[in-house]
Length: 229
Image 1 (cartoon, one colour):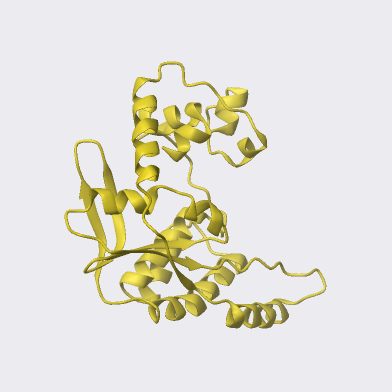
Image 2: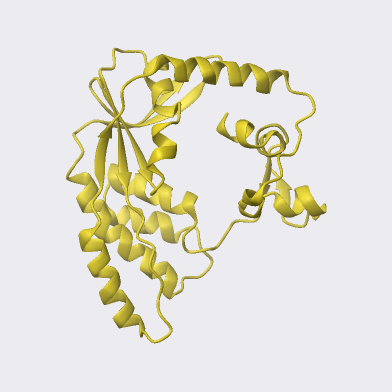
């Protein structure tokens, strides 16, 4: 629904036409890093690293910099989390979702992002409570900070990594509670109805198009990177 709200055309490509693109091999691929972090929080650091590495055709210095971040951040995250069940599936006729961690009556969702405000205003965690098959009394996000520093032209790799380690030592994950808001659920249900009734799927062209997987296909008609699932 967030995709539909941002750009109906992107929603059509992804969820109706089921188009996907050639895998992005950039070291900071958000999907690969997010999956690795979830794996590490459910299992261990070694499993997270294997998950991350398995997505790439080859590994560079930049990829190993991301692995260092996983090694440093995951133990800090695990120290904050209670025992519970990971990847709990919620499924109804109109909704499918996965709770990252369910600890009795406490839902925790993991976000490897510095965009706190965006997620705090998202309906996602409110939907988990709404569709859960048990009473839920606490909702929280685990925000895992992204350390974004670049190697200077004057730095060697060891010099850069010393600086990276210093930054990571000060990077602290945080559990942030979210009060339940039923209006978020109502707005989501209204958006779902609008998406279901949509027939035109107009393109919403903004500066964010450059980060869309379908940008060249949508704006230029280039389809060499597109294939159907």
